[in-house]
Image 1 (cartoon, each protein chain N blue to C red):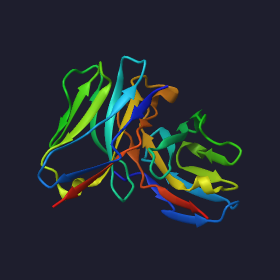
Image 2: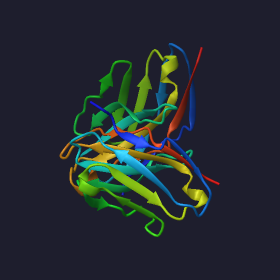
Image 3: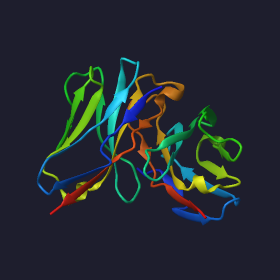
Length: 114
Length: 118
């Protein structure tokens, strides 16, 4: 079974530029999560999708962050414009609907804003 | 809201020895899941062990075991016979037993960096 795919692996941008991250979850996984992991901290949920609908985006800074999951499969997270404090690892995870327990995580995208 | 606290930013253990990583949490729920995840430099979160709060028996996975104290809201991870490959960040995480909506998200602690020395 293929894992959760994320790209790019690394990205360096200047502040006020825009950036997009892509995630392809495990086939058949209905739930998709985007987490932000700032250096020295644990991952924090940004947004959760169930199929192509948003379940929770309460921690997403909506003035600059946006995310979509068209057709309920892969997802894109965008930041525009980026700030220095957005430097972090962005992790994508997925799980089957109705599951109780673990998730499968991707390897993340490390974003550096200079 | 639930919170997870890991008070040990770094720990060190010699190869073949035993180490215990601490985790406490706060919740008003009576049923939930607790997890330990390992994050190596590759950044991918790897599930180490899982504990269901309604089970009194502590979970065990090979060299990894937990000490789950529900009343104290404590969930420590013991790694026996430590190996060089165990070196990584370890995160404690909480998940509600409710499987709908926002309750299925994971709430993480700040992590403990484990070093394994020869």
